[in-house]
Length: 124
Image (cartoon, rainbow, N blue to C red):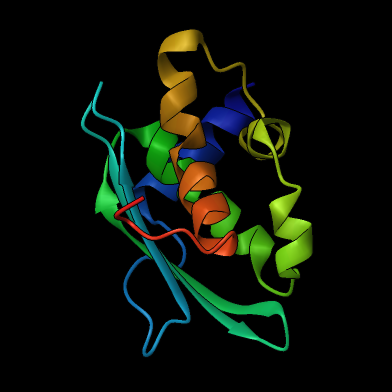
């Protein structure tokens, strides 16, 4: 368990793929009004697959670590594969028990990614 906690802290302090993409194909912004966590996810899609990903925003360690860990996993995946991702995929990446209070934090990056790959816009 300590190993997973250390990895989460590492991703929180040194998030992978943090920033912006040049000419992203898909962008989705979302927030958790209960805690204030916020994310903007950018995807670059080429040949139906994720060629690159970036995110910005702010949030707790769980939210930011989940976004960072997810960003490492989705490159090379098809949109169809990502449409099938669910909360278990994110919880498996985190590798820790996430209580009910932090579950929405952990799932915020997934929610933004799924909205993007389904073609939703921030207005919907």
